[in-house]
Length: 152
Image (cartoon, rainbow, N blue to C red; front, side, top):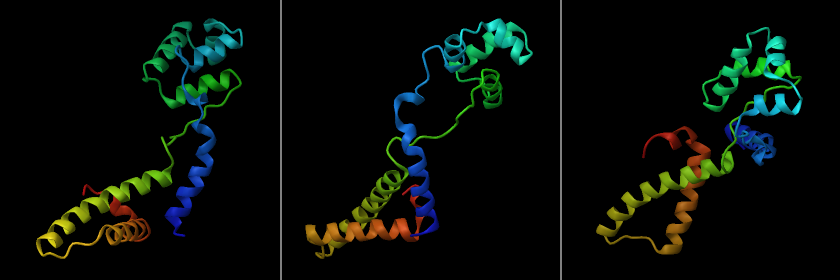
């Protein structure tokens, strides 16, 4: 297994538990949801952050509007005895994303090749074509992983 494949599988293992809906931000944002669950007012959070209460209101609005910084969220979390968890969570898995992309690249290559071979009356049978497609996908993932992301 290559280093890239090993890193991909390791990240898939670590990110798997994050795929649940726990990562879906509450309608009014995490800061406000946690603050209210703790029974803390905006003024009390402001005092803990050593900022003006209007700053907490702006922070909560900024979170909902996706304009707040990670550093600010980290400070707010710490002020409520929480920690900020930041991650990219793949829709499927990194492994599946790579396989899907490799299949797309190979299909483009085979489309060009198949057209040329058909013109020369040398087209592969469907089973042979499927075998070649599978081999090309595996080779591309193993030997040319960076070429996956160039526009085919």
